[in-house]
Amino acid sequence: MQHIVKNNQWLGDVILQCSGSISMLFDLAKLNNKSITDDLIVGGFLNTDINKVEKHIKKHYEIKDIVPATAISKIIENECIGGIGCMQIEVDFIVSGEPTQGIGDMNIEETLEIY
Image (cartoon, rainbow, N blue to C red; front, top):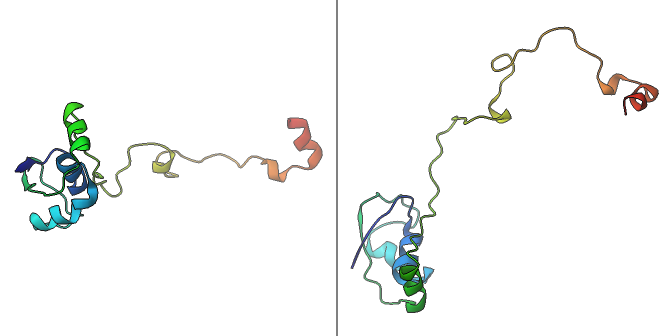
């Protein structure tokens, strides 16, 4: 039997969908000449002729139309989608003017007056 790889699927997702058990993961990898960590090509075919099948779990996946797709997408290094983690002093905001007195520079009486 063959399985068409869906977006964000890894071999663990495929074996769960096709056999209902993760226990045959290494057999699936060997059958397809893959490492369990290989990125799969969306739309590619995998041979899923596996002997051990957890029928009740596989049937549940089929009835509920569950298609596991839990692979971690690659994140482009140094790509920032926003937020304070992406901000840089003198690039995103400019520090200017005279320094003001910080709480650490105040004596205890001045600090208590603020609160």
